[in-house]
Image 1 (cartoon, rainbow, N blue to C red):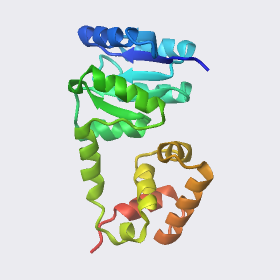
Image 2: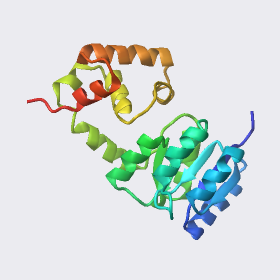
Image 3: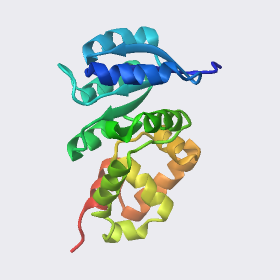
Image 4: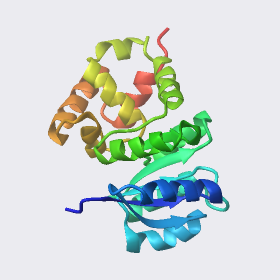
Length: 211
């Protein structure tokens, strides 16, 4: 196993990209293996490079960062995608996570936060800027008072939030540090409690406001 984390960058702002490159090159923990100013160039190069983690801006010329993640998730399934952007729009946050992003960081948090986020993602975590984490909590708290949610254990509620975000069983297991089999058992219990037979039914019923 390599002693460093291979990192790629997709960032159209030259100064921002150079700052990210410099901070990575100054650390013995990372190896910069690719840096691009647009998604199209990265999509062509990625299958040959296969970085461990790819830093992706949302607002890019041509193909945007979310669509880039969506495409590369299929061709580079073992690469982790970490959004690094200025956008805090709800649509961008949730679409990026659904596309397969492992975390969502805001550029104004600074380069130290970026380095910490890369390490956290590589360790199996889901790094989120504080504002983004609060946004996600507020979003799902909107559903927290319904009867369905109150039937679930705290672990089951964690899992259904991740199911609603489009995470696979394997991704849920990794994020919660449990086995895939344990994840499946929890999901089976969720289906039984909500009296449903699929992910879509479970998420829709969980989200349904109660009268």
